[in-house]
Image (tube, rainbow, N blue to C red; front, side, top):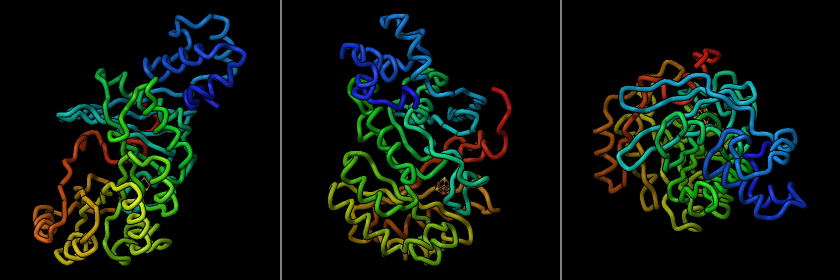
Length: 336
Ligand code: SF4
């Protein structure tokens, strides 16, 4: 167990019989100030700091590479207990967003994604997810105001730690990142989509769709062989009904796979009548020899004519391999 994974209440329980305010001080150092070691907790007794460093340490976490793109996006390769993970900071006009990984590697096997290389290795703890945020912010030099869980891994297969991470960064005594400024992206784990409506009803939900029919989707995403598009949409409808919030559907436009006018019409039909927004994404490198489709504007106009709310997402950080898994797959081990 690492100290960054614990809520203020859990720190209080661990520290008993220390007074309650001590847990508050420590939680604030960890999640408000974002310190990287016990020595920085200057109002905590030295003896207690020394004990904690042995019994409840910080995650074993360090930056191995930092690459900055001309557009300002910064990509980090972190070592988490010796495993490599990626984190990206994307500056935007309304503030910086950090994209964190939820697992080391990924077992979902999406055909166009480099994070699947090497398969699933392990889940990240909530503290390791916080460490990505705080370390990336330290290196970025400006405050981060938004968080997306869209890096390596499937967050809903590491559900408990993902919800814990959300609660930690959302805590008023910590960084107090508003729920509406947090987004979790899943490739479609149905029972967890429904649980998420109860566990984090104000947090944005994004679903990787990439195909509006079973055949197109299954050719790109093995998860579609377990869950049909109809079942996925039924789970998303339950989520939308419970939260009264729209779901964002991510759709990466891939040449020859899912980007024809027919595919656009099929997607428009699927979205009709739903509380939904479609995010069209230009393929950014990736794996499997796929090429980005060049007709994003035409695809968008078919959706728009059908009354579907849709936008083309601006890709940032291509120059530093910001698409998930590329840095980890290609350069793991180089020093920062
Ligand atoms: S797109 Fe996401 S779920 Fe699919 S393999 Fe990559 S990291 Fe895993």
